[in-house]
Image (cartoon, rainbow, N blue to C red):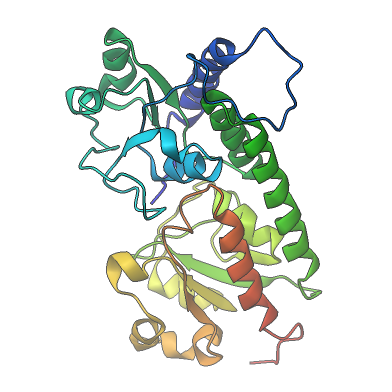
Length: 301
């Protein structure tokens, strides 16, 4: 699951710097090529990419760079044909990474001096931290497209994502008052506020979190959830923790919650809900479908 990093902004700056250097190396002296062209034949375009981030892996394949990927980390399980290894993105081992003879490594953090270790071996690194909003997602897709020789493919992907999202939002029912929701990250009641990536997605879809405050990922109490009585509950801990609507209903007092009583408790694919890449459109479509089943005028409890 993607989590916020304290040094997020520093890493984003580092990623942008690395991208600028790589893009400069990949640029051609001939600027007459159409923007939609794909060029993976240049000697400056990486042919052996190692991805240490599930989100980056999904982006690489979505822009058409899958054939250039030689290895991905142990959590990159999508798409199904990605070359999964036992490499760790959390505790990267430079020696193990170099065993795949990469010319580019993509990661979401400079953990364990990853960048310095790879630089000594002459391998470029691109750091792409967890996106803070949709614009970050679009920018990262375009960065990977530029670095891998798939500028046109990346531009088309971003344009299609924006079109799909516009269509999703246009199909939402009108409401005078936003629905309230509780997004459960794990069974100890960690959740999200509106001031997070996933919170922004929910806000766009006409929902507002019961959690507030400066911490975007607070831990709530069961009592607080009961007091706030959310209209909808989204479970992003079905895979990790085995939480289901039935489990939620069995919690002390939770059977009386509006969301439980009205059957508005839904299990989300926790990977799609935490990998903020191309499949964020799938997440939005699923939440929009759920929202569309809830009457615009809620009956009084």
